[in-house]
Image (cartoon, rainbow, N blue to C red):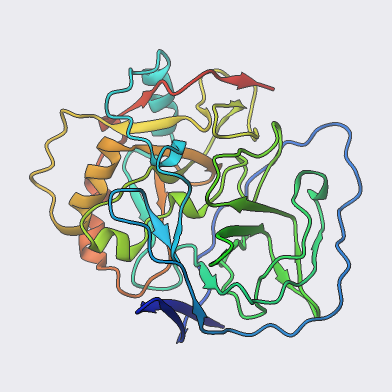
Length: 342
């Protein structure tokens, strides 16, 4: 499989091809569906040959205004993902929910590394990237219809989740698929979502996305270039093994049991302010600082305390391994809004 990256030089993104391998297997998650469903959505379209192209993109958003990729903001600076929560009050269920996550694993785990078997890949395409049909095989009634500008060569996460993430520069749209498979003319997927990266609009209430929580995936990923810059300005995505049949915005979907002792989708965990970060160095220190300022959001069912990152051969595994010494007991859940039970 081939992966390509956009490199910005004087306002020009040049697509560079690099060899990569699929991501590592992830735990299969259960999704809860409404009792009444509709047939999978099929979006007809003529066959299109996809290709990578060099594109001109808008200037990169200024430093301090939030994260960006491909010349596009990853949501406005005031978006929930980009909002500091260091001063938010502790949730009344914090002790219970932290204990529930600790019941299956007790330390953090960076779910990425220099081995490209790990992590969730993504790709940036230009505004002229052809759009191809997307046929939904399961959650079409909760998915955004295609066509999507997803190249045939787009990297697919390994394992059961098989996520595909694509940012289109110019239009600044994010397209994400779950359980994606290439077809002769486009893609099949269990579910999919489209996001305007310049808008704070949430998915419809009760809708899934490419993630069980109905959240976008890309905004919560650890990305090498961002960490190497010395600062992460957004919350991170992480998984827990068991969740409550409820959600806290910006999450919109549930996938769990009717048990209030379990954290709901969208619950935001924060590394406590009294944790001394001086024993940690390099990229691990940058990540832990972000966890104190922005925290991390429960986005899917999987291995507990696994923090998602983008696939990248440049990761320093010894540096990231420092995170494995961080106990879950150092975290607390912050109150970011009401819980919706379903």
